[in-house]
Image (cartoon, one colour):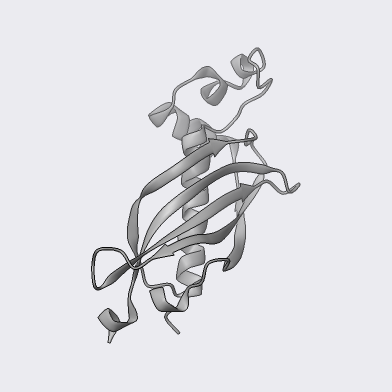
Length: 150
């Protein structure tokens, strides 16, 4: 059953995961998009404040975004994209071997300016396998209204 804007309530919460982070993926992403030594060189990373290789925050966001899309598909939300992201925070470094999962909660809902699309703001938190949060953001989602889907 597809869930439209009208079916979503503030406070709705979902959990989804898991995604295993590999060293190879960390290095590949960093080489292409965030070539800082603590993301690209395990030996050099030992001499940084992180003390070991860490995933780029942008990589962490990308992995959690993948989990979010999978979760939305599983929940059959009539998702139509987003207006952006607010309050992005990287909390704890992600390392090779970590397993990520997410939780998101609907924090605000508005009819919006379009008759066919509503606005749904959701707080996403990404977690490591030990339950420590690694990232948070508020996604400014767009959801199809039921009247548009009929």
